[in-house]
Image (tube, rainbow, N blue to C red):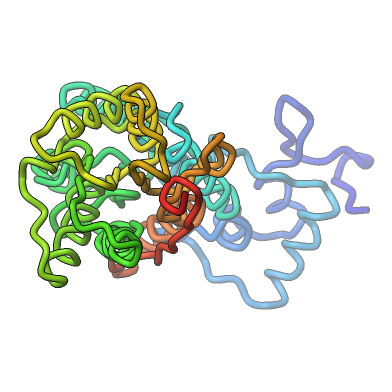
Length: 349
């Protein structure tokens, strides 16, 4: 045990009786800045480089006196808060909640804490929540509510705020997303193999890249097979069961009823299944429905929902890791994660 110069009492302890950097500096016979350099990695004018023997002695003394850094003081010295702010449209959405779990886990593994704010996909709320998050001195942000035009994000980037996107892409900002275009292709290939030529799409919100890219992949695959999906059978909707139900009602009321429908979100697909039942149709027999994401509920429905599985948790993990690289000053590139098809009774009968 290292003893101080006053009968075993450590020098320069704080009000709580804890050893400080000055405690270690006096016991090691070095300047406090040298101790800070060794234990906290700080650099600056007047900071002496410590030799290996000195550094080892400082670390040994720190361990013996039970030194633990003060997080608040450390953040003031380094100008780091170790906080990451996350914006999502609705955390109650299972997809977003799963993505956030991945973000939180990866942030914690890097010594950061994450917190989340909901924006409801409203541009005014997005701006307000961003200001609120930045007021907490976050080191970086993750946006899960990006609008594809990217105008607001360009403003945030212009302020020098490090951020990445998750789930949705926008402009050239670094993002981690599912390969949504490929996911749309998978849905189309599945329905084509089942012989569906007259199909419809519940395309989600027109400002979200998820719906845009999934719809594009689906339409292009049908076009490559010589089948045009007319604009009249592509209906935009909210990403929830109510939106899917209303969109399906419009599709069923059209001049030619589709034999199968692709909804770009599982909850919209569940709403479409409800509308089909209300119209007296048996899902999987009279009409096929396929969704996107593979939320846990999808396989537990009375008629299991065919869907395209997106790697939701992995997206969150990879987005947080991408942000950590940005914070470390590394160049980063957007990442696309692969989707997979999950066929169930809603298309197979």
